[in-house]
Image 1 (cartoon, one colour):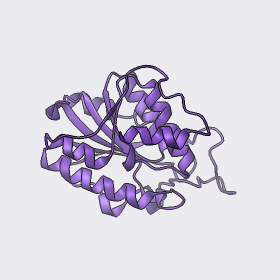
Image 2 (image 1 turned 30 degrees about the vertical axis):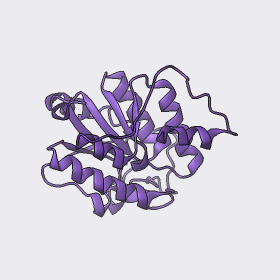
Image 3 (image 1 turned 135 degrees about the horizontal axis):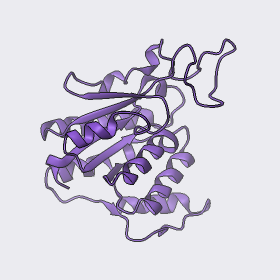
Length: 219
């Protein structure tokens, strides 16, 4: 990974996620440590925010709404759209608002990354099985090299989180998967653990062995 061609992309690490996300606090703490490490190497930090217009205009089909037609989640007139305070952006960071799950769908994310000369994405965020999942695929479709940090991701439950990571491991052919402390070691040029895809559908996980297979990503 060429650090000069790398960016950290954090998907929807917003206050909305403080309600009902399993393992959120640990994911935020891990993100904070990784952000600090990336800053020390002048790696750009890019945040996406999911925003639903308070008047309901532009919502996805069947998006959950209140009785008055306003969005239940990520409403633009609430503080829930702001990034969690512990990892909030600094002035020099890039913040990109979006209206669909993927950080790339009808946003300037790809433009910003290419303007910065980025080829490698260190990526994580919320929720693993939704906005993070679709953003990783869209990044891969655009030929970015994917460095997924799985313990800065979180979902509403363990099964959703693990299964999503395992699906990405199976089908994003250039993916490398780390924990945050291992990615920090990598940035420092130290020996580190990383899981690297070697073949399509190599993990062959089932409901019965999913946790055991997931743990293989740490080896």
